[in-house]
Image (cartoon, rainbow, N blue to C red; front, side):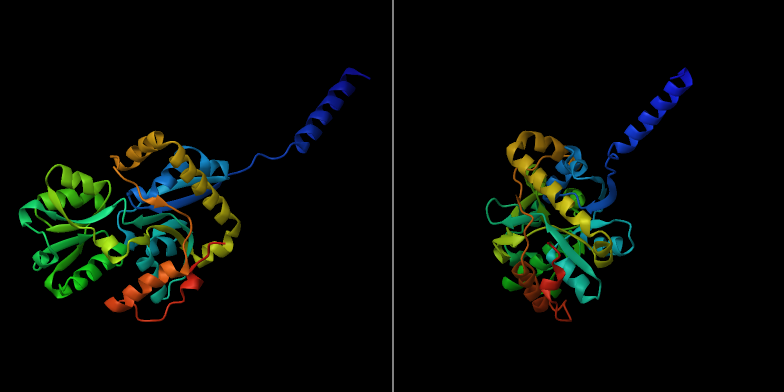
Length: 308
């Protein structure tokens, strides 16, 4: 065979060989929104330790400070997946928005305590009655904390018109208590510990566990349209989080490093992490929403779950 023939044969072999090789898996880019809280450590770990990439996802984590902003962010497609709590999802459904729960994330239980109503030390608040005439900060209207604070007040014979409830994002709660902008806040770890440890505030009550000692916390939602267009992305997303939860359990010290990178501090306690959410979890909050008069229409909780 001539030299030119050998070159042609070699080129053909190389070309055929490259065609036979499987194409490198291309990662799907997604924007995932979260609020800065320990509930989302599995997402931070899944990003930093490569679990999203392992399952074919290129995730950009988008920090959004107020939980009530997520429905608009999802419907406008500025994010693909976002966090929510049951009250937020129920109110979105009540308003006619097609948002569905695709995966659980955290559960908040009585022990270890993870959230408390914390009052400014100078306000001298020790009971619910002491909150009359005071301003209370919650991390977003229609959030789980908003619902819980309102029900806790009613259960302790404080009328809602006797207090002022305002939106106060978690990272700003310490400073807003310190300068007297608010008198009390519904704080979660690690922000609660910072407020208490330096004497800025005092712990009044574990309002959330008083309302329900084992409640679904944050979870992940997406729009119905997005789910219909990307059905094959749901399980890889869940699998990534499941891997991260297992990693956190096996590597607590390293997970704390990741937590501090995202939140700036380490929490002395973390919530329980679980991808499971039931219709009963949502129905509990539907009952609360009806009691508060914020849900105007019947909501079929089962239709909001897209966890298969």
